[in-house]
Image (cartoon, helix red, strand yellow):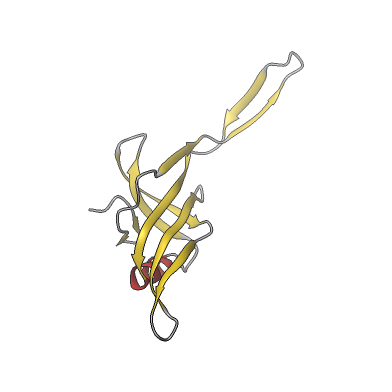
Length: 123
């Protein structure tokens, strides 16, 4: 099974350097004594940052982008907190890549430095 799957589509293994970020949302302020008062809001949320593929075919990159085309998608990944698979609703950040090789018609056949991140919706 792949490290990451979007709506069941297993992504190719990304380059080393993926950064799963766990964020605790807090509604906080300070009281008259300057002490922090606050409470946790909802559950911990995740961001999968640093997703990069150094080299993909145009077909692979296109399939990955199509998997993200509905904007909100379900991501299955290994939760670093529980060290088990978890599925959450996410949306993608900017998706970037450099066309590398092109065919005689000017269509890219390969891309390099393919990147995006995935952000938890909190739902």
